[in-house]
Length: 344
Image 1 (cartoon, one colour):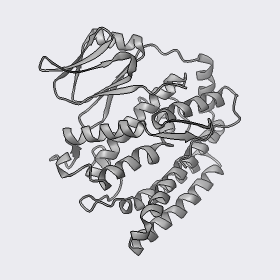
Image 2 (cartoon, helix red, strand yellow; image 1 turned 180 degrees about the horizontal axis):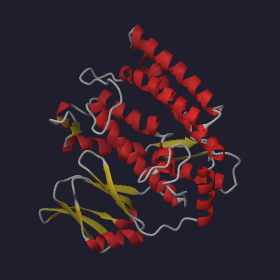
Image 3 (cartoon, rainbow, N blue to C red; image 1 turned 90 degrees about the horizontal axis):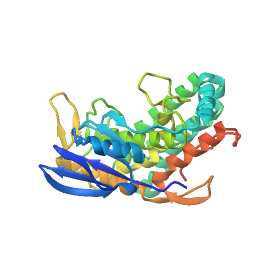
Image 4 (cartoon, rainbow, N blue to C red; image 1 turned 180 degrees about the vertical axis):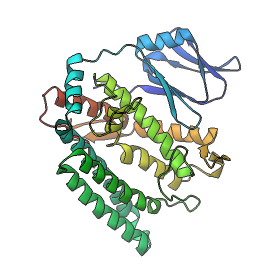
């Protein structure tokens, strides 16, 4: 199984990265502020226009270390990586399946059913841990959402076509995010619905950043196992969209990103000082807030869980890699279906 490599996050304004032997060095104002051994890195993520020396960029390309550039708000800008050695026969099989809606349907059904079941899992966990302390109205709302998500997961598996399936996914999302405010136990923050580009409240600001980070991990997982991250089964093709990476991340949104977001607010690890409001109405993470989220994300990825299909305990951050491997095996004909991951 692939080793969980570290991600180096560079968030300081004016930071410059350079190569020193087999190390990546971060300097600010000409002073070295940190270094990381390259053999432990799988990815470098740069915020705030960090500068990277050409020798380091070449070194990372040769060593298989990808470099992603994000805006200060966490919006993906660009990615630099070396040559990909994916199996051309695997990619041809993937392309054939994505071009035929009937062939793509089975994989997409598994993804949506797992996504919906994992959203239901977040709500069930809240009811189990905190339902007894909730007022009647919030508890009833969560109970209703749990039933709606159960129905949506069941209907997803019997969807007759992709359009119907996407409709079920939308219904599930509406039920889930309608209940999401009742999962927040910090009275200093509220949630009135999912919004982005730009996010207009602190909760959405954190969700947006976590989704960007998760998408980058899922793209790396696709490429590691020879899959084309642009050609998806559920998400429609669009220039510049990494549709398969977005497909893969659907299974992990709720248990990896949403639960972490809720924990950061419910445990009061984030406060008003960690956000700033822009004149445009956007609400953005401050430098300190972004650092808190990134640290928590790395810690979340280092938690261990048992993967049901492989029947082994692994770092949570490796689960996208494991699912990409299973998808590749299915496309090669080694598995009859794609076993999407359901959080238990």
